[in-house]
Amino acid sequence: MKNILVLCTGNSCRSQIAEGYLQFFGADVVKIYSAGVEKHGVNPRAIETMREDGIDISQHTSNLVDDYLHIPFDLILTVCDNAKERCPYFPSKAERIHYSFSDPAKATGTEEEIKIEFRKVRDEIKEYARDLMNAFLSTN
Image 1 (cartoon, rainbow, N blue to C red):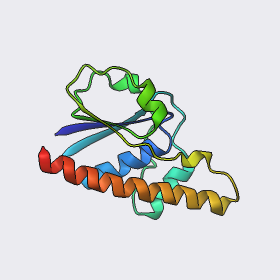
Image 2: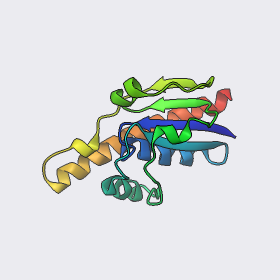
Image 3: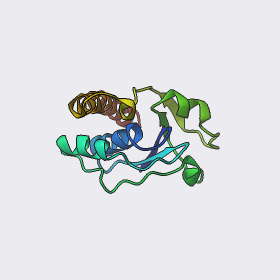
Image 4: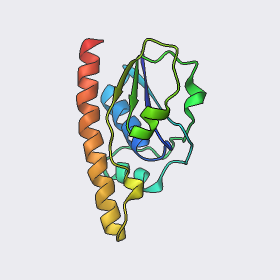
């Protein structure tokens, strides 16, 4: 079983969405963890947006990256610039990759405009997660 860590600032939206899709696309071959350099709680709009696409992240928890320093990761993915800059050193041979997604929690406007932004980011993460898992699983 391969271990993958997804890091974001608050572990509330982007990393939670990525965890859901990576686990979905990786099935029983990978164990996905997500964490933040801070802990903000799982965003209810992220849960709702994922539910719209048939993925339940309602039982996910918001975790700090320090909670996982003991796990031997094969891949560490940062999904925002802040997390990349603040990511602690992991004593491992994990491959590190970075892709910065916009933060849907910062969306403003009407409720419908905010939902549109969440869906846009969700769909971007979904496509990225599918491609990443296809590449990762074909080389490991």
